[in-house]
Length: 151
Image (tube, rainbow, N blue to C red):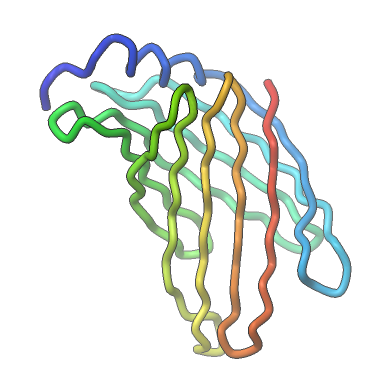
């Protein structure tokens, strides 16, 4: 992998630190509080690593992954996996100082029904926002949460 530009690496490094956020999971009978912690650390080579935990009323979601600048392809890339069995890779779309990653995947729920899981990570103006979306194809129910993070 070729050396990434200093600007791209500086931008990723500016997000290193401990972050907290909260939102609500909506789409069920009533909104459920959704609290998250996110830790961003320097990874090896041209990457930053992130790990996060979100607490719901009756569940904990943990995520981890890396965000890197792929100099050969001239783009940011994010990899993410979760304890919900989700794994994904997303290409960062950059517009000005804003980078967004859309991760989408089809899964099966415990009953064998199709579930579409999505997460969008937004890096903009020294802030992080993560949007979650889960759609159960059998019922058509969609649960969403948007969590803005602050240091």
